[in-house]
Amino acid sequence: MASFEDCIDFCSKGITFDEDDDTENDLETDVPFEQVQKGEYQILYVHPETFFNKKFGKLMRSEGYQTNVCCIVIDEVHMISEWGESFRPEFMKLGELTCLFETAGHLALTATATPKALKELEVILNYRETTLIISSPDRPNIFLEVRRRLPNIRKIDKLDELIKPIAEQLYEQQSDFPLTVIYVENLESLGYYFRYLEYELKENGYNGENITENRLFAQYHSGYPETMKQHIVKDLCQRKPIFRLVLTTVALGMGLNAPSIKRIIHCRPPTTLEKYMQEIGRAGRYGENAEAIVYFNNSDLSKARAGLTSSVIQYCKNEITASGNYW
Figure 1: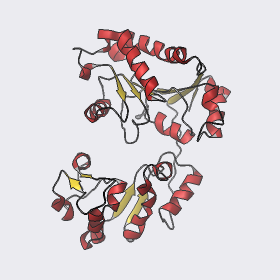
Figure 2: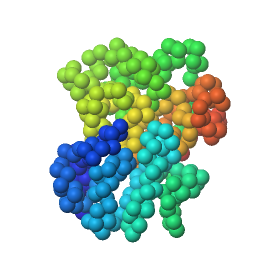
Figure 3: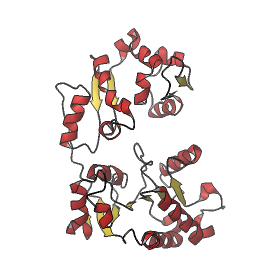
Figure 4: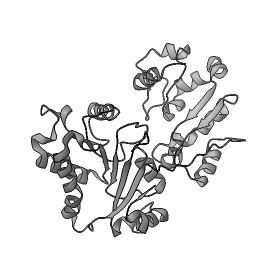
């Protein structure tokens, strides 16, 4: 069995693909593809799109792989239904792997799928005689709190009201500030928060020399340079990260195992409780006390908001969570 570090190394080098080109030559690797063909890697981390690349698909149908593949594991399987319809359609085709590897074991993992979603996924993945292993998502170490925010018409006041106490606390506590991730609803607000912190903290926004790598706060979104995103994730995965506050869109998400996150703040409620549970679950990973705060106004809970579920509305208006409660 390859070590976990080896697997991650292969994933970071590994197999890349061009989604707009399905020719024989569009599969690229930073490790010799011949080693993959010979089965020199015991664990392969693969993008769903890669399975439908002609060259890789041919390899999966080869005698060596048909004989030796013992298990197909799909992690974060709930993303099939969330992303598969339009954003990444190959997710919806993963059931073909069940047919391709008939004698192998098949394992699908998720922390947030509802009973209805599980039944749908069972059909999509072509599973038969499925064994369900379900544990409670209860995280009693996470303190839940719901807070109202100003209406959207008071745009700047609404943003200032949220970020001002955060900036003051970070200024006072510096490296002792509890590691916090703030999910921001759009890039415009994220940029405003970042500039606000720069202006208010100045040289106090750094741990040591005033260079980017020593800054106590960071921004993370899909358009941010890849090298900086990798640096942020690597730092967050340390026991004592330099970064104490990360402003992010939903781009910072799946697979993040940051042991020191103590607080998750949502500037706006996600559209489903499943998404919310997934995102606040990144706090208190090792059982230490943590908190999750979500802000809302009436516009956030409007029935006209696309994809908004009634469970989110009920959660935000619940008197227990509105006053703070342990989940």
